[in-house]
Image (cartoon, rainbow, N blue to C red; front, side, top):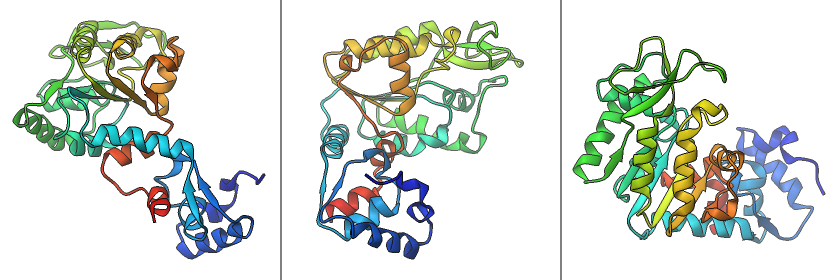
Length: 285
């Protein structure tokens, strides 16, 4: 048993030669490399990329299972196919949206990132989070979704509060009436019900990112309603990302109620963006 490999600076060095030297030292400790850390396959680290190139290698059960699941989302997915995205920043999900838009039938947006979409539609969003640099990109996504006949679900109502705080008083407002001194912290109840209704008929669903600040009870309803709907669908549902997995467990759902809980947040997203992941490239070679 070795010490945590990331305690060694060479593991994550930006210098290829440093990583290669470290990997060469590690290679002396064994004869076969088994790669099973799916959550790190998108990182070009010594033990993830260089080391498997120095030894006979094989993918472990977790990586094999994760890739098989992600292929179900990218290669001839069973339709109707929905992608549900939340979380804080549009920048974290723009690549996934762009790559999957031509593959999905329904795209549902929530979380802090939804306020960039609301702003792109021309509405004021108060003090809510917004990626101003990506407004034009979001407008292009909205237009492209319409051209492709992809149903784009955006909230019609949101839950707002004067401050990002557990005890901040919550109000439900229309997206066209968000007060200037308020922050959007969840999709509204009408929107959550509408999302749930549309998701019920889907045969394949990928969900990454909560619909609101689920850690605060007043702003957890959107995430809970969507989670409940996805736990009941007859199709195949993949929950990806640590925040989404934490949300369903915090709210009392069991992992077994969902088709698959992915262990790879960033790795899953980069795979769905169509990027080559160093750890998988090394194993495939």
